[in-house]
Length: 89
View 1 (cartoon, rainbow, N blue to C red):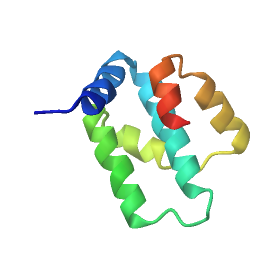
View 2 (cartoon, rainbow, N blue to C red; view 1 turned 120 degrees about the horizontal axis):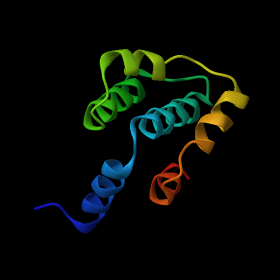
View 3 (tube, one colour; view 1 turned 180 degrees about the horizontal axis):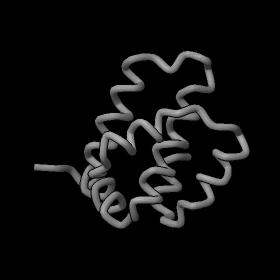
View 4 (cartoon, helix red, strand yellow; view 1 turned 90 degrees about the vertical axis):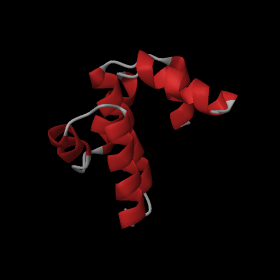
């Protein structure tokens, strides 16, 4: 039986539109890459999360591409769901 924390995470995911899901994961990739060591475990986590989000392989390829700091800020601003934004923080 899922705990309350797990249920809350799933509920915020279902409220995100496709653009917000992609933005969320792009920001996650940028954060994971900050130490210049975006390792295989981190990549696998992002790919698995994309699958949970219902995103396609093409989306995953887009998400994994490096982007500038300015682009990450732009992507983060696309996330209007407060719970999703708090999860990133």
